[in-house]
Amino acid sequence: MLADFVAGTVWVDVAAQSHEAKRSILNFFATALGSAHDPAVSAALRTLLPFSGAATSAIIGRPERLDAMGAAFVNAISANLLDFDDTHLDTIIHPAAPVAAPVLALAQARGLSGQDVLTAFILGVEIECRVGNAVSPGHYARGWHITSTCGVFGSAAACAWLLRLPADRISNAIGIAASQSAGIVENLPSAAKNVSVGNAARNGLFAALLATEGYSASPRAIEGPLGWARAMGDEPDLERLTGGLGTTWEIAKNTYKPHPAGIVFHSVIDACFRLREKVGPRIEDIASITVEGSALLLARGDRAVRNERDARVSIHHCAACGLLLGVAGVTEFSDATVFRPDLASFRQKVRAVLDASLPDGAARVKIQLTSGEAFSEIVVAAKGSLAHPLSDSDIEAKLRDCAQLGQSDWDIDRIIDGVWRMDTLAEVSSLMKAHR
Image (tube, rainbow, N blue to C red; front, side, top):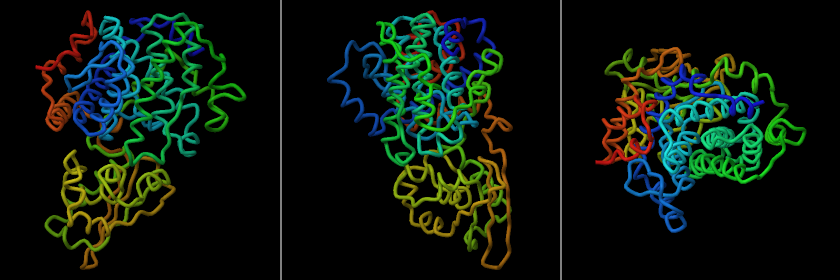
């Protein structure tokens, strides 16, 4: 059914979703540019360059080029490194990195249009998020990194559509992707997490290319009795997998982060911002901080902070940024700030407590001053959520900030203009030549 849906979709079917797709792709460029010269990106490039085929596809924010599969891998890594990418809240999938990276890489290699890219991207996001819906929340709770494990299905479907495969071969591409799905939550505080996101992008493209050449797969590779869903989770919810296909769109549920931290920590930061306003100059008088939230919040963020990757998934560091610094941008999650003695000391005041009554993504923060005074704030829908979304101009500003951080020489105005006009581009390659 998924393959039939992908094969039968044309631009007019998805055009109404194109603005949200452009927002997501703009955010994708922002996060990739912010990490363009990160050591992990440079290491991946050094590893792949000697083995690259025809260098058809750009590495965002850099002068190097790789073959399409290599570029898909590296650009997906860079888009995911800062923990600043888009988020589908129902599943906590970061949709763009594993789908936009291979779609843009393949489109450059094949001279495809911006409208083709948008159509494929919307379809890829739909498939990865629906697969994620079908196995949530048990799949993630078992330790599978859902952006990686489900992202490969989105990449495969999107690339198969770009290659104009018929439904039977799209089905094979999705089935081949099931054999390449991997990624574990244990690796979140390390660059190994980003490797699995890069693999999702590359492996999905690889699956589509193999299907093009006649490779086959089980038509029930996802939902079969010994298929992917049961092997990596529990009984799949087939209604959430296929119900309303073509009527409701998962990309409409996408959100964008104002802070480069795990999405479940944004309510912690917002609550601390509010408390900082209440306390005013008495921040140094805070004796204790209690952060209450769901089991997901505690499982993700009740951790020691050893490096900047830990900080991005730390309740303690997010609370310290919100209260002590009053800002939580890229700089505040860098090593230079993470290891500041005052922040390290302040983090010791933070205690995380389970409150099962709070939904995922919500947080209650309580502080007590040395005087005995107590204050509390609860945030259920943080800035950047569907209830309080970032505006188009917010996302543009985020792109400019990230480009400055990544010290790229790419023409940011040209990227912004090109993404907003993507459906008019005869070849998407023009967007990927934005360096000055």
